[in-house]
Image 1 (tube, rainbow, N blue to C red):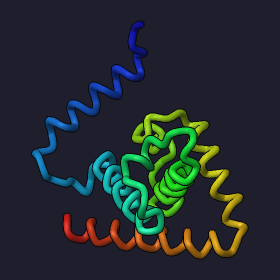
Image 2 (image 1 turned 180 degrees about the horizontal axis):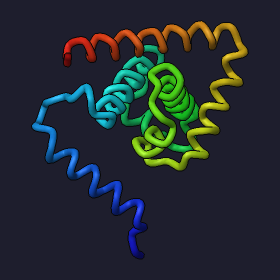
Image 3 (image 1 turned 60 degrees about the vertical axis):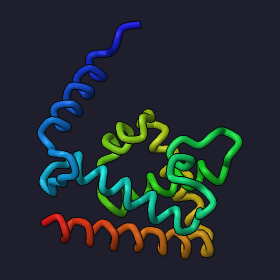
Image 4 (image 1 turned 45 degrees about the horizontal axis):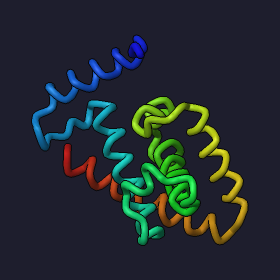
Length: 140
């Protein structure tokens, strides 16, 4: 099967970005680097509540693991809404279609009507924002 033009372009962009960034260096002006940092901070914050799940289990949950799916959806919402990562960029990082990202946001928005869930979400979002701001300050 042939690779689509968009996928080829994205792969080429990723490899060129990797060549430009020395190992271990973070560029606060590169949107890809900021998005990677936001993803890391979001998953770390969600893991404080879902401690029994590894980050890898949250990123690629099995169908039968509903708690891992919810954790991934919460992390997606934190990235998109709290840390201002573009939904297209979130879908690229998650290797999912944009509609899946939209449905994840919708699911979490519906759950936010529950006050207990909202309190837990706000705690995770605050942790993610704090970690992101700290990392950006250290990199500057």
